[in-house]
Length: 95
Image (cartoon, rainbow, N blue to C red):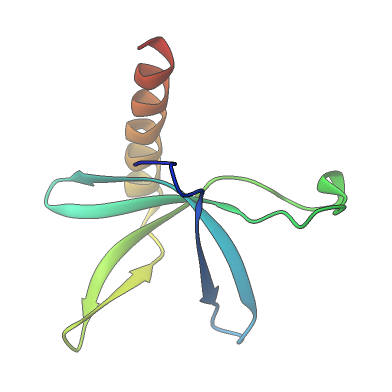
């Protein structure tokens, strides 16, 4: 992903109607499924220690012919995809 123009941000809405801004970090495909990794966007001056700023993994699903982001179905899938992103991250660090 080129960072020539800066980071990519998206806004998502959860089941309760709360909006969150996320920074897109990486995308990968595994077993015919597309997964995307995000970090919550941090506002300048925000106290990072007060918030949980962990990696967020979502998958692309098709609903009524439209692509949407969805949470991962189970812990096994989450763990496997997390490992793929970590391997990719560390491979890039070594290059």
